[in-house]
Image 1 (spheres, rainbow, N blue to C red):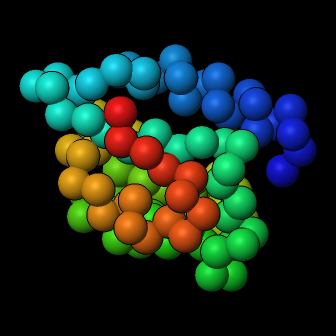
Image 2 (image 1 turned 60 degrees about the horizontal axis):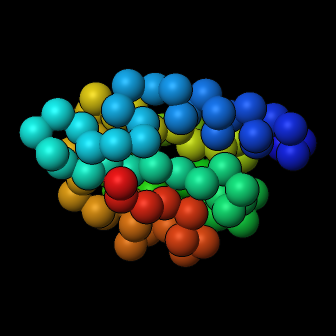
Length: 92
């Protein structure tokens, strides 16, 4: 993915409902840093965090692409943090 595509994705994620704050009820949710995330470094381009999310709040449009977070599904369990070897996910 090109650098400007990563920046555009980050800007898109920042505009999602609740993207930069807490979700309803004060529960933090996952945010993926598009500058740190390198899906090609994961298992065959598949985001491991997307595989461990119990509510499927993290998904990849295609193998090798940056994963996305659905802020309405994420309940802040933190399983994705442990799965991401690049530490590209944080709870905020």
